[in-house]
Length: 103
Image (tube, rainbow, N blue to C red):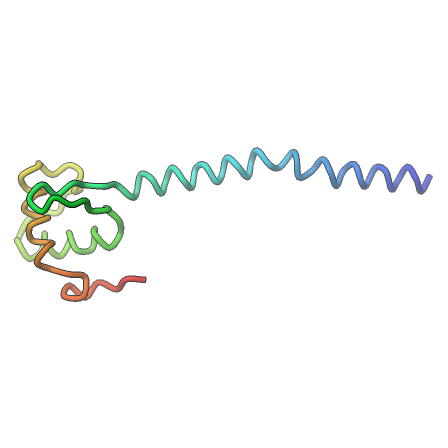
């Protein structure tokens, strides 16, 4: 009887991680997809560089919107000319100048 109990416990200990692996992998995939959606890259034609859109950039954009007396709209929905105006402004306003805390 003790041999059977030991074998059953060992079998369960080996099977549980294998059964849980797909769930863990699926959760990791969802986190990666959410991060990819949150982090989008925009090309700045006038300065010929790329900008990663993230929470810091969104904070700066909100300052830009307020300073320029505009209504907030999701940056991805703003027309190309207005996006370029933001990038031109952004090159003159660093995170330090805007007091955006980078962590």
